[in-house]
Amino acid sequence: MPNPDQIIVAPVMSARQLALFIRLPRVLYRGLAGYVPPLDMEQKDILHPKRSPFFTHGKAQYFLAWRGGKPIGRISAQIDFLALAQDNEPKTGFFGALDAVDMACVKPLLAAAEAWLRQFGIERIRGPWTLNSNGESGTMIAGQHEPPMIGIGWHPEGLGDAIEHAGFAKAMDLFSYKMEVGPEAEKANRVPKNLRERLGDVKIRGLRKDRVPEDAEILKTIYNDAWEGTWGNVPLTTIEVQTLLKALKPVLKPEQYVLVEFNGEPVAIALVVPNIFDISADLNGAPSPLGWVKLATRILKHDFHSARVILLGVKKKLSGTALSAIIPALLIDELMQRGHVLPYRTIELGWVLETNLGIRNLIERIVPTPYKTHRMYEKILGPVE
Image (cartoon, rainbow, N blue to C red):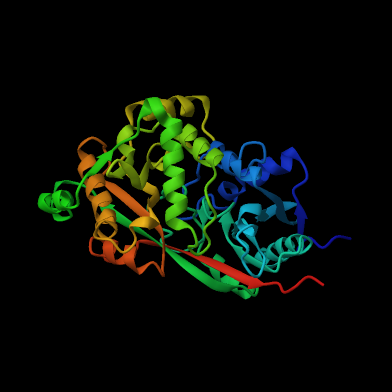
């Protein structure tokens, strides 16, 4: 007779199980203080093999944990061929989408991910990334009671400890900072006009709505150049940027794209996206027909009050120059000034590596401490025999 207390981990094998995998966090975390479910539609774009651009350069296997016939946890195991092409040693695969409230299932879920990766010669497992470093990153270890933010994962307290108990070690912390926007903040962080003038032929512009594919390619090129060789970085692909901008099209305004040009050449970029939770938090992840009407109306009104910088980068060719040192401040200044056009009261600067002291020092002059922390973990699997 089956033991009703036994935890069974099994791969996702059907469309029905995939649908359950995608919506499972809002089932597990319903009613927990601080949790607000994301839209199922948004999660499907990230996780569904037929909709996610990750699967153009990677492969994944999803797993569900069951106890007594009920789902109690989930995890993904994935290989990104762009990451493997970087000649990292040891060969690294990833886990992600790890969610559970019954922490007893965390170890067997991770074991299933490890076993799947081992069969492809993977020697180190790192995560959580959903599905790589350009998606949701880290396990939330601080900030569970802060307002939710687009693209930022929420996890219950104790999940990080359960990962460590499964034999994983901390690899990196990622910090998120909440920056107030308004006349006082704008004045306090303004780059002096005379300093701007001494920088030379520097121009700043927004998105050209009639040339979105071209501006998407500029964004990709600068971002990949800026972050090449950075811990955990996987380059953005053209299809990923195009998919992102397509998804953002209903809410994207030219002012949310900040491009710095020096002597006519694009050298720095920032992309700000409105926080979908501002208008969807009361819709419970799967809106009714009336809920969809409410969501569409709120999008048309651009009824947001917060936003997040999701992509920011400065070309490496400027490293060591005065312009390189001032551009991050210039980008923040520009975001502040655009507060006159955009309705945001706060802007999140997130996923700052704990080791990136240059950016941290700049941000922490404005916001002394992060308000959310996500932790990355890794484990050496050893050579495959």
